[in-house]
Amino acid sequence: MPKAEEKQNQYCFQLGQLNVDAQEEGKKKRTFSGVAYSGEVITDHWYWKQVIFDLDSMQIKGRIPALLEHSSYQRAGAIESHAISYESGLTVSGILLSNEYGTQVATDSDDGFPWQMSVRIEPSSIDEIQAGNTVTVNGKLLHGPITVFRGGRIREVSFCALGADENTMAVAASHNPNNPQEDTDVTELEQVKDALKQAETERDAAQTELKQFKAQKRNDDIAALETELKTQFSAEDKTAYTAMDDASFSFTAKQLRQFSGKNSPANNGPSNLFTHQAKADESNEKQTFGAGSLVDQAKQRK
Image 1 (cartoon, rainbow, N blue to C red):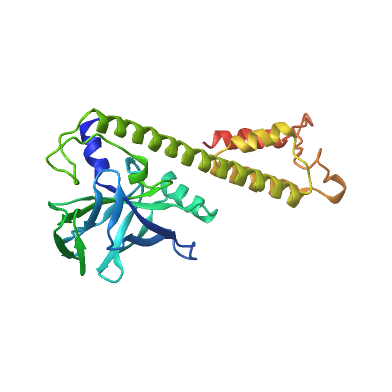
Image 2: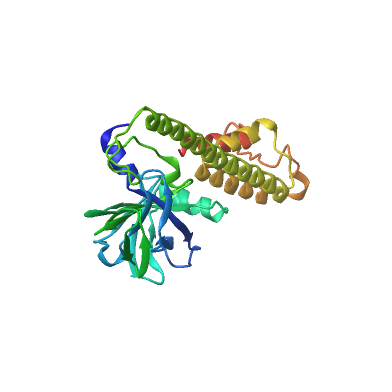
């Protein structure tokens, strides 16, 4: 893993749930909100062990990017406002972009997927409180060993299927909060390798779960469309509908409903449900547009 990525990952934390608000009439942008950080001690972090962020010195300047899975190439929204207090911690609210990543967050949330909120915070200073010592942070008296982030700057928040602190790992020989004088040895490196393998397994499981969730949702939508149109799609059509992205499937379903509405009761069977005939002025040539042509139309829209 590149050193720049190691540094970024050790400052990523899964800290809370978020809510994507329902679409409001007259508003173009979807909004979201959540508790980015509660103000409590974060325990069992893969790198810092026990760590707490000092709310009094926390820095949030301007609009903060909201990404998908901490990728700067997947911009999903932006933090518009925030509030900090000992009682509620750091709460944020923002908007989702209308691009594919913002739409993905909104669509999956509408379908019930539980997005996690993860933040990247970089402190201006770090206090290592050793065992036997105490420190007061966020109105709480805490006992060492514990790490305190002072002047933490929130660089970005992310929508994650699995929180970043459970999903990333890096070798950091210079940091050992339980015994700062001890050098990294072979045993520690082996532990890191095992932890990395476990993190990769959890990440793969989360990605598989998301794919299964989307596949089941699409199957349910196809079945509901069959019921609505009182027809039975062929296996070939179902395969094509399953492979479409959300926008293409939505377009195809809309077209199928329109064609179905134009058919007379005598011609609304499955074989005629999506057939439209147009006669040329001179040749009376017939042209048929079946469900397959709608699939082609949807593919062309990608």
